[in-house]
Amino acid sequence: MKVLAVMGCSKFGNTTEIVKYFIKSLSQKVDIQVEYLYVADAGIEFCVGCHNCIMLGEKKCPHYQKVRLVEEKMMSADTVILASPGYMFSVTAVLKNFLDHAAYNCHRPKYFDKKMILIGNFSKWQKKGAFIPMESWASGAGFDIAGKFFIDMMPFPDSENVLNKKRETIEKAAFKISKKLISENPRKLKFGDVAVFHTFKVLSKIAPNILIADNEYFIENKAFDSETKWYIKTKVPILYHWAGKLMEKIVKRQVIKATDMEKLKNVKGRHVTRLENNGN
Ligand SMILES: Cc1cc2nc3c(=O)[nH]c(=O)nc-3n(C[C@H](O)[C@H](O)[C@H](O)COP(=O)(O)O)c2cc1C
Figure (cartoon, rainbow, N blue to C red):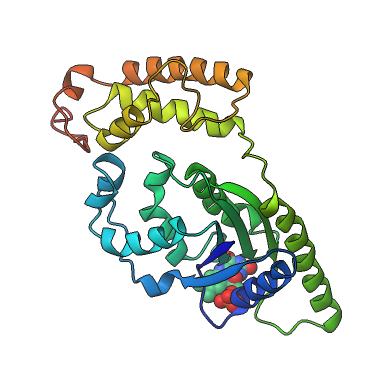
């Protein structure tokens, strides 16, 4: 099994140590070939917020050639690890910057046949803020999340006792995650997964000239056909499907109420509303 560790950290710090120890524990249970990719090495400039990736397609991103290299590596792996220390109660800027560049995947997911492992180096106080960007990106992009864990490895020397507990936490996580990696069970959908599908689908239908790439993606994937329940053919609980369809109607009604539908007809791509000059 090919594992790609996408490292949102420095090469010589504690996060690297955690990931290496995890890989060592995991490799005792599963046959894996691992490659480390430090996101900082990709040299991706900051996202400029042009929205091209979301609206016109990822190839229109000014930094596409660099983002592409990371994404191609992800595509060729069976399992991806996302790892980050906690910086300001979130992930590192370098990882967040990559996630911003890859955020379009949450509109047009493609990683359906891959598993994801999330690893954090932070205290329990940072857990929520740091896991939210990693987990929402991974599940939005289509990954099946095989597991996540965090360890608090601050830049202080731990006592042997504390260190042993940390090793044990990593080993236990590796054991649990190894079972998920081997499992043939398909990804279990949460209502959130189904809700996102219906939301982007209906938005791209209302504004096909703004969400151009999304609309093409949904047409290609036959998402507008009445029998299509998710991006790909998979088991969607009937209650989620009905609730998703209802959500579509509510979103449609609210968006139409809040939008100038006449002006919308003449917009192509991203629209910026001028707050002065009657919004034109
Ligand atoms: C810029 C920066 C911001 C940080 N923010 C936090 C924080 O908000 N809360 C916290 O507990 N630790 C914070 N830390 C500490 C790191 O999470 C901690 O030192 C971690 O072990 C670094 O991982 P590394 O050794 O892999 O680089 C911060 C460190 C840096 C360099």
